[in-house]
Amino acid sequence: MITIKVLGSGCANCHKVEELAKQAAAQLAIDAKVELVTDMKEIARYGVMNTPGIVINEKVVSTGHVPALSQMTTFITNALAG
Amino acid sequence: MSVNKIVSPRSDTRGLVAVGAAAILWWVGYTVLQPVTEFIAYSALGLTRGSPLGDAVAFFLYDVPKILLLLGAMIFLITIVRTFFSAERTRQLLGGKRVGIGNVLAAMLGIVTPFCSCSAVPLFIGFVESGIPLGVTFSFLIAAPVINEVAIVLLFGLFGWQVAALYVASGLTIAIIAGLIIGRLGLERWVEDFVWKMQFTAAQDESATLTWEERTTRGKDAVRDIVRNVWLYVVLGIAVGAVIHGYVPTDALAELMGKSAWWSVPAAVLIGIPLYSNAAGMIPIVSALMEKGASLGTALAFMMAVVGLSLPETIILRRVLKPQLIAVFVCVVATAIIITGYLFNLVM
Image 1: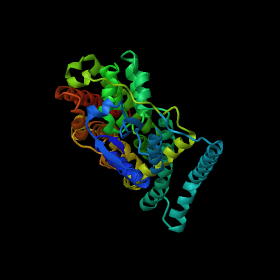
Image 2: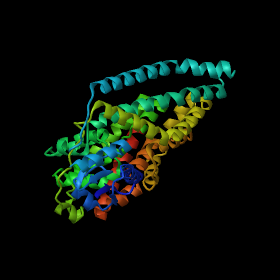
Image 3: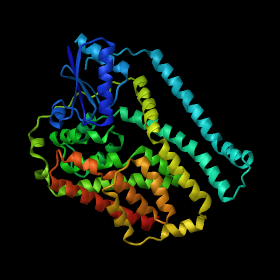
Image 4: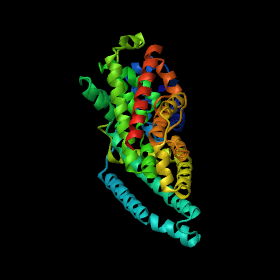
């Protein structure tokens, strides 16, 4: 199972990314835990300065923009490949 | 970052051809716009040139597509420029710069760094943690939301390049001066304590490794998303502008722009502080204000107060700034905007 954390303050873009993450995981039939992290200290801990940030299995894969669904699935498959 | 990228030269060429074709179409559209819309207004619809209704309609028909074209081009270009920058890169560029130069650089970087106001807090933490002076960080945070490409295009389209240039120049000046003042006051103790205690290592930065195809895709997506959000404000703003254009005689407008009670600038700023709107939404209001007789300085000061200082933003910043610092921030920026407003009224 993979963990996908969406880092953001709760604005519309962050929710979009959260939805995309769930969609991508469903599309790949992957068991994924998607959570939205709004705590600023947590976000800073990952070194993310431009939200929305996407963290998969504790690794930051994207900052600052809403990816396309195809990009999201690429992030996930790359994370699985390790 | 272990993202596997397949960069095919063929997709890059294809992308370039697409952008080239779009640019040509854009240019053709832009050039024929005025004659075509004048034909529609004065021949097809049979309105009289020089009549208030005729001129207003011609202006509206011409300006809506014109501004949408300019907006599309501007958003596309600046989004691509922004793909070369990132918060991480800006943080590196600002690190170690002296106060003064740092403020100027920070304000200019505020224009080209991709930034959403919901990122204000993590960005603040990241900058401050890496040793960037407080004042310099503020210069960035003030410039970024105020100098907004949609506002610039709309001001250019409706009021001419001088007003647009003035807006950018004043946004930069306010950001630099306010940042310098805040830095001078030495208010580090009014930043929430946890910020200083944090360890911050920046996440990796993709701005250097994006392919051209990715950059242009982002440009395209930004155009689609932003135009979808602001087109109504654009139409409204131009409708108001069209009414002014057709119905208010040129001399009357010049007279009106000159008149302004001395208290109108601070009043406009004080009213603007608690209000919040995006930059595009402000343009119809600025047009309407000027129609009602507000001078340019007052109207722009109002716009900057609304866009640059917002209640939602101060609430967000409360997570890292103590109330005293927020108060100082608001006062310094407000004062800078007021002074700029007076300057415009004097100069224009």
